[in-house]
Length: 131
Length: 360
Image (cartoon, rainbow over all chains, first blue to last red; front, side):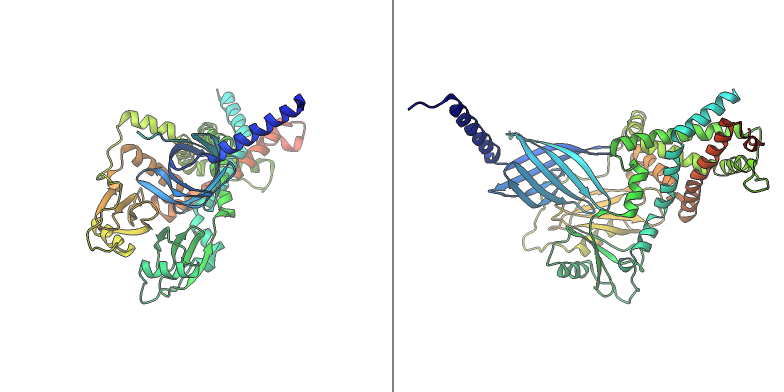
């Protein structure tokens, strides 16, 4: 029984999609991630350090500007390639909506909300390699 | 030379005048933002002083009970006996009557009218582009004020001739308001320019003086527990902090699960410049002070920026300077409109009734 070339191509494409989806979602996010963000219309680049713990689709851990100032992660979820969580540092609430750009990088949007204002920023995080 | 200066004055006003007017009006509103905010939200802004003030623990329990045991992020002790205590939670800021424990209400995070005004003042609600426009508008305002003074000098007009709304009216109004508001506007424009170019100014200042080391002890990675000891309460943390910096009043207490330690922010009531730049990190288990940051230890750059901000916001001399700053701000649109009408009259000389004595 012969398989048509067109059918073969479709099967390969399907496998590629499945594999890429699996690789995008299967990467455990647990570990340290660092990066920066600059609020649109803001002055400064703000450092970020996260200690993430992934349990299936649940994301917990902490984040903040450095290791000494960490805030608990709230509402952390991982669905498909989308990582969402919140941090409340005080007057400001940080809502992250990230995507896994590579095995060791997360990119996405950040919404900052206070009583009165709402700001946005682009965020990029990279996994901190352990020594 | 005079013709050139007039041209510069006109061009700057035509390019940036509208933005200067926005800066002025929005700045005037922001100068009284706390008062206006209380006016807009009276139900969560005022309490009747009672005999006994509840502890932070009791205030926090009242707020947490109301919202399903949600943890406390931080406390904002009231700055006046007439204002309620505020409790920061993930869902928003809860106002609590510190005398009765009654929860007055919750303010959720998100845009408000005053927030919009602030966003207009700082970035035209347009992100980086808006911020760039405004910072260069502040520079333009400096040149506009300087050139305006040069043009005013030979005339020295500080009165408005009758009849009202005659051709000369705008000329007199522009000159009179210009000179009367010159000093506060110069200060606002100069300090606004510094704020607009904060990073560049900071780098420049750091070249002249190395940033001083903040008086701070090394922070351990985690809390140090003493055997058998219970974690200290936020009230005890405030007591420790106030004892360390006598004469200060607490205005913010960050809970340890939101940062690792209690962080108590304190203000000297009589220090108008950077008086609120004091904070102590306190270990919740041992009660020991992990680090201190005092307003007296600010670097030259930090002191300069704090002074600059106090001048810009008008807080440097309290309510009187805030009123002056607000008044000067609302005069900017008047200057823009009167100047624009003067320019129109110059640009359209065919209208004989516009050609009166309004020429400089």
